[in-house]
Image (cartoon, rainbow, N blue to C red; front, side):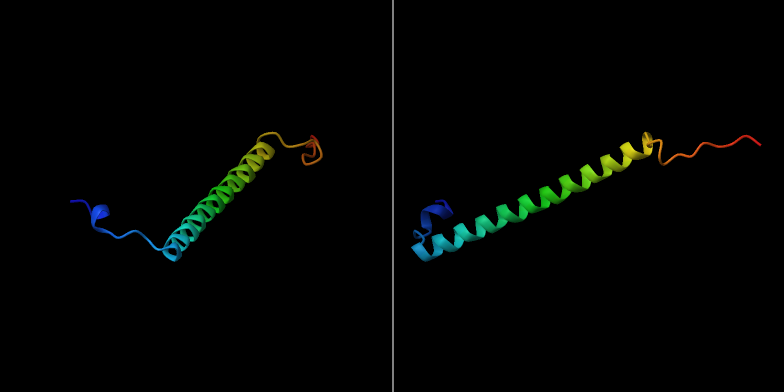
Length: 64
């Protein structure tokens, strides 16, 4: 016998709590992924700026 065969069906209240918990878990995962995406985007922008700085940030060196 499996555990699912022994368990009684959930009441509507228990089903609602399970649904809310699942929605909370999905929202937490989505937030974590979005924060990671924003971190990666910021890091890529920083690397791009460092690799190819604009002419306004670089001042020419005058010969001595």
